Length: 315
Image (cartoon, rainbow, N blue to C red; front, side, top):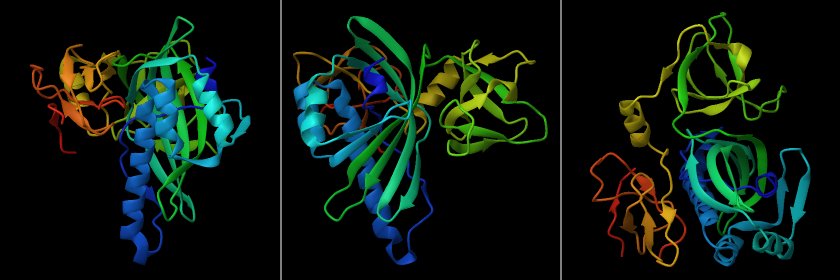
């Protein structure tokens, strides 16, 4: 899909796991800066569900130009502010739903620079056609003196046809060795983001015909692993209702509400499709619908929304 293979977007409030730390004397200050950087990325992503004009105005102050975007094929696109604005205004795709999958990884990559790697479930419509799948993304954020700015967004991999809730509970093959967890479905040293232990339980999304499988570990990390490293001999356990509830209750793994056209400040509960008042609440904040009978269900406020009656969930 063209829009997903160009300038990409990511969603959700991110967990902090900064590696390695900067100098001891500045560790507290740097932690605050990184949290701010994650908030900037969160708001950048939340704007994806808004109209093009609103999206451009909200995002323009979050980027450091010349802004760099790397496509899945490795081609680098460098955009000044004028070119970027034109690209955003001409986009034809509309994002219906976005959801963070697992925990993002935040790594120091240089002085005043952090990289945020994450996975997103997307449901978009372009030219009347629906696209649903998982996208692996990477952002470089510059922690400058004024405010963090996103300077590089990279699309690591797209996989179509992946839907939320279709996990199979399997395990890594018990062969006595660890397997590499990768940010993209290819061999190489640069895309290794973790390890999966021999016999470790993992959650695998349905991909029967795929050579590389998209998995989530119990710690929340997500990525790709070669299918030869997964044990398919035992019957898989499909995620049951209680496991779904537990997933929703897990920190940092909640869907965004759906924007309600023509009613600024009101959204649709993504679980029940009922209208919820979120006027004045910051994009990305975690809330629940006070009228939802399932009290454990929570969702995030999308970018659109203009004092809020949803119940804020402390994280």
